[in-house]
Image 1 (cartoon, rainbow, N blue to C red):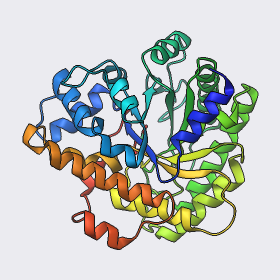
Image 2 (image 1 turned 30 degrees about the horizontal axis):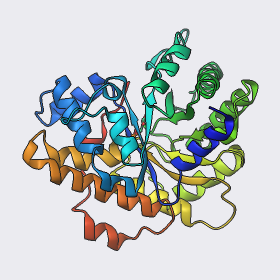
Image 3 (image 1 turned 90 degrees about the horizontal axis):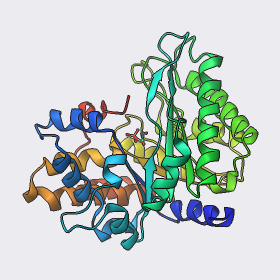
Length: 355
Ligand code: 13P
C-alpha cells in the first residue's frame, strides 16, 4: 500500500456526514455489559451481537468504518460470511483494535501505560491480510490536581507513535487515541490544560517516529469537566474549549478528528459534536465521531440478546448513527432527537469501558 492509499482510506473514514462505530470491546468488557442485562456472554452471543450491530446495509449511510476486536474480525455472520467481507460489501471499512490494554505504569500510583508493541508488526500484517484497513490504539490518561505525570504522558505518546508508524508501514491507517478520562472532580479548565499537554506530546512523538499525518486520524476525548465536578460546563463551553485546544495542538495535515464518547450520555455526545461543527472560524480537519458506548448502548438495550429484537436493536443504532452523522456536519437539531429517540439514557449504561 502506498502513502497515497493511506490518505484515501483516512479521507474515506471521515467522508461527509459519516463517522466510525467503535465495537471493539474486549471479551471481559462486553461480558460485564451483557451481565448487567442478563445476556449470557458466549462466543456465539457476542458474534450475534456484532452481527446485529453492523451486518445490515442501511448503516453504511452514516457509518464509514467499524472497529473490531480480535475475536470479531475472525468471526462470520450466521450466513457464513466473514465480518470484514460483510463490511466491505456494504462499503464500510474494517478496523481492528491492536493494543493489548492499559497496564500499571512502573513507578507511578494510579497511572497506566498501554501495552502491545511486542509482535505488533506481524499482527498488523495478519490483520491486513484478513481485511482490516485501519487500526486503533488507545492510551489512557488519568487526571487530577497532580496527574498526569510527565513520565506517563511521554510513555503513552511514545507507544502511540511507535504503533502508528508500524501501522502505516503495514498499510493500515492508524487511529491515534489519547483518552483523557472524565473520571474525577476536575474542572473543564484543568481538562483543557492536560489535553493540551497530551496532544502536544503525542504530535511531537508522531513527528519523531516519522508518521505521515495525512495518513492517520486522531481520536481524542472532548474537553469536558470531570464527572463529579460540581460545575458542569454547557454544551457551548465544551465546544469552544475543545475546538480551541484542537486548533492549538493538532496540525492541519491531519485529515480527521473522530471523538470518543468517554462516558457522556448518547445525546450529549451528539450535541457536543454538533456544537463543535457549528462554531465559526477555521477547522482544517473533518470533525466526526468514533463512538462506542454512545452508539451502542441504546441498541444493546433494545436487543437484549433476543432474536425477536434484532430489528429494534438495529433501529436504535441506525437512529443514533443518523443523529451523529448530522452532527458531524453541524446539522443536528433537538427536534430530530425528539422525533427519533425516547428519553435520554440513564448513567448506569455508561460505566463500561475497556480497562
Ligand atoms: P467510547 O465512545 O465508549 O468512549 O469508546 C470509544 C472507544 O473506542 C474507546 O477506546
